Length: 112
Length: 112
Image (cartoon, rainbow over all chains, first blue to last red; front, side, top):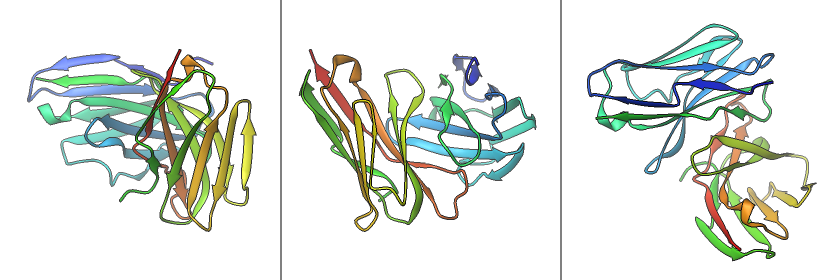
């Protein structure tokens, strides 16, 4: 198995632009998680899905952030409009139920 | 304070020495997990210990859990330079489903 796949690996954009991050979870995993990691705030859970349904989005910072999971093999995290304070590494992780999570390599986002 | 706080924040040792990291949490849990993160990479699951377990081993790793003190420790024996990474504990609350709460991590440096 290729593991959790994220794209792009790096994204540099200007303030106000729309950013879309993509994730392909491990086949057979029914839970998917989006995290954000910064030096200041550490690793934060933004949202997680179970069987493609959003279960907890309390970590989504504001309305500029949205996430979708149209099917079991794909999820997106969108930021519109982006701001410099959104600069961070965004991780996607998947799991089979409430067990260990498998993390993707992350997307390093820089908003200028 | 956040659920899952690691102590110390940073630890520097010589190759061959043992490294001990501690984690404290606040609410009752089902499981406690330890993850490793190499610089610029995603987190990698190391070991899971259930709330009814007191100790678990995996290779050079030894994890203990004291639910009465709401604390856990991770011991890495005979450390190697390749063990240099950040180590995070993560807990799932009794009602949190698949959601994990990560601590701020311990940065371990193993000097050759």
